[in-house]
Image (tube, rainbow, N blue to C red; front, side):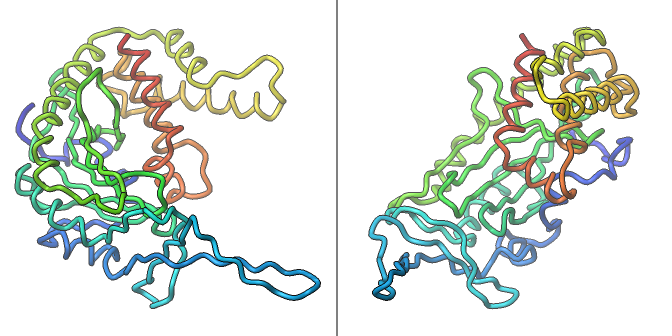
Length: 326
């Protein structure tokens, strides 16, 4: 990896990433708590509330308690009103957003980052994230810049653990390349249980392994950029990633044709592919650029939320990476 270079050299440096669209830029806010306060992530007072249902019969209304689950709710700091988050088991360990501050400040110091870059909430607060940009970058084949971000995700709906991961980010097209490489460790997670805690020392100890992941990713990227991919090969990749049966309904086939046309346009004509065109690395970037920036969505914010949380998007990126590195 090399020293950081000026992001203004990127053709698409003004394109907004999913982190920017779904969150708030918090660079320069000092410590993590200040950054989260700026992004509206503090003062939620996440808490458990007993669940009660109403059984309405001809004899009247009977309140029935649920002994197995509780509701998670939070206070909206903008309005002071209580907002529903999710239903979880009684043993679910509540963690306030502020509980992340210590580990985030420690990670910033350990990684030599200038501070947090973005922070935000998705799906009405059910998921939160913060990012920090590391002071190093990789330049694939000496021409294509990929920055490195540490990203901390948390959930308040029982679906995911608190997780800190390393995410490569291609600057030319603002693509998030959150991909697994063989057995390399790219993230560490802590489950939400009653006795779990965010272990600063434990996460810091995994940073070296995450940096090893960055080296492994860079090695794969170097191989991919020097490996040819024909247009026919790219078409085959698209058909494998988005299979459409011969008996699919007309609307499904029409949507598939539009998607195929868009992907081929990115592959053959997009300026973001100019310095890498014709390589397997370019094939991966065309697929990722479509998923991150062009796949149909009701709004840019909705697309950004999908990029950050959808297992379908993540699996499709991973499938493309696995096929192109085989």
